[in-house]
Length: 235
View 1 (cartoon, rainbow, N blue to C red):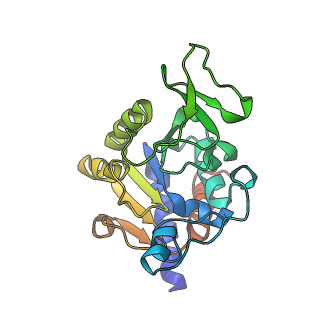
View 2: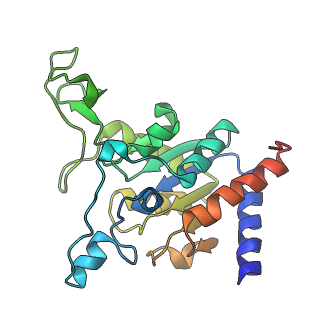
């Protein structure tokens, strides 16, 4: 089994090396190693609910949670010029906290650390303590609740990059919440390879070119390290 994992990690590293338009798509599973719960993982919020169990309590405040090695591996892809776009379903602010450029990021469900202007759509940090945008519009939570439309800019860029990518890497998502989960379908329609790293089944498993049931921290940092060697970037 260990040998099989090693081969799959090597394949992922080679595909990352060959890729000219890499899109990474993250869900709650990438943040579990930072101490946050996911939703449909083996001990996720919805999984526990379906078993009649209460959600595990979060003992830390959102702003005290730190990015983990999975987040930083994506930052490394950005630094190497490999990451063309990052699409996230997460609201935990950990991608921005880890060093991802806002220009390369779509947060489809918003961000707990930011407010959104109801008039112009601009986001500002909650820590600024403002109630009004520079345009005069009211600032409200940027987090998207069920039934609300996704932010236009984020959705548009996510679709554009999904349709242009040659490698679509899913990290920690069950791929069941739409329209976010439509992105891998757009990538497949455009001929991209689909790689899924997720501890739990997804509706796209049978269409994935490469599948990892292991944790993100067990896979992605190692693949990125091997990519650095392929690129001649020795640590």
